[in-house]
Amino acid sequence: MSGTTDIFAVLKDPAAVTALGQAAGHQNMQQLIQLRWIAVVGQISTIAIIAWGLGIQLPVAYMLEVLACLIAFNVASQLRWHEKWTVTNGELFLSMLVDVASLTAQLYLSGGTSNPFVFLYLLQVILSAVLLEAWSTWTIVAITSGCLAGLALVSKPLALPLFHERGYFSLYIQGMLICFAINASLLVVFITRIMTNLRARDSKLAEMRQRAVEEEHIVRMGLLASGAAHELGTPLATMAVILGDWKRMPAFKNDPDMLEELQEMQTQLARCKSIVSGILLSAGEARGESSTRTTINTFLGDLADEWRNSRPVQTFEFENHLVHDVPVAFDSTLKQTICNLLDNALEASPHFVRLEATREGESLKLLVTDRGPGFQAAVLEQLGKPYNSTKEKPGRGLGLFLVVNVARTLGGTVDASNLVQGGAAVLLTLPLAAIAVPDNSADEVKE
Image (cartoon, rainbow, N blue to C red; front, side, top):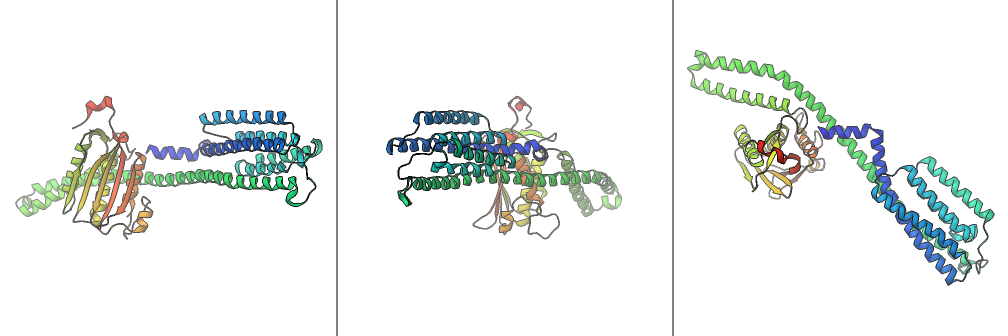
């Protein structure tokens, strides 16, 4: 299946795995951009309160210039990362260096280490520990430490009134409390968001690895089935020749009951040969050389008639609610997928099976229902996992496993549930785009 190849390629290619991490980095970059806008608003508010509210002398013009540069950088970042969806560690590192540089410039202009907001350096360090690789984080630690030491040497202390007062009357203490509240709040909000992004990335990788394992299992099964089909070809042909000879022998030819038995054996043998041929045809991709151009109604009608005539079902209902016929390409793999659903229903409910076909938007929906005991909760929770069955027989649980993976390869879904009135329902949803015949091939559709 092409989907299997794509997943294996992703998981075996370090660059492809890295791209998944870079996609999560894009979301984290968006968080940094939001945080930078909050910093811009906070700096404007602080400058206004300190300079004009409290009357403390600050180089407002220079501070606004630094702020303008930060705004320009953030606007450029927002435009760039709106178009580009992968972010590297180096790009995140550079972005955080700009934040550190901006904070250092503002602190230099507003008192250096005597400014209570100097503890905002911790915000940069903690964010770097979450977002960046180890070498980048330690570089941020070294740079912020150097900036802090430099501010202590070259900056002028901020002339705060009531600087030496104790308790809440000290503006320095009040600033420290505000800085702590801002640090704590921003860390809780943004680290929670960042960790959500990282968990989503890890979950995506785990899901892809699990899917690769499952589809590798399908590949192995396909190889085994193909090999078995080749091996069965010769004995089946031999049996067909023997049955033909028996029908011409006088001992059997003159016995009507025996002839009827032989005819039934030939019918079942023909079905076995058809199954083997189908395995060989569909051993490749889900949409391969075994595709047959037809229409939805023709395909489903023929499938329903064939399944009804070849299975010992007491009552089989087929309801086709498709008003508009659509040219499509169905192959033996998809045919076997639908038959697997019907066969599972027949095992649970030999007296009644129902197939209903509907169209919803651009999707084909096939609903198979029965009147059996229904699914157990454990089976529903692990739907589509190999060997997920309560039947104590070897190989059970592979039917739904194959159905789910074929549907997933075509971009569809499989949902299962238990009916209130008793029995089970399995809904196979397939996008019409995955099975539709291109317009330029519509004239080749087989009716």
